[in-house]
Length: 54
Image 1 (cartoon, helix red, strand yellow):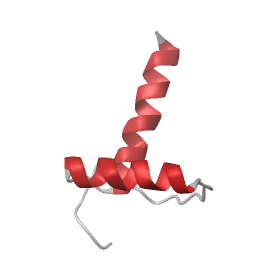
Image 2 (image 1 turned 90 degrees about the vertical axis):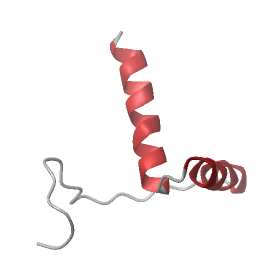
Image 3 (image 1 turned 60 degrees about the vertical axis):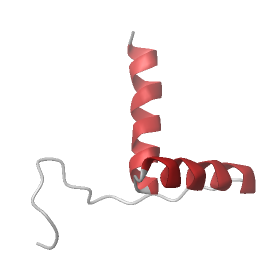
């Protein structure tokens, strides 16, 4: 096993299509927060999920 041990391993991959505008927003968020793009995407998924589950 490579990388740091975790209780929530990220072993699955998915592909998504994004517009140029979406890419620019994602890169902006990443630069402003210092977070990886994948972290920003996961946070967005969790935000929508939590809103739906209310």
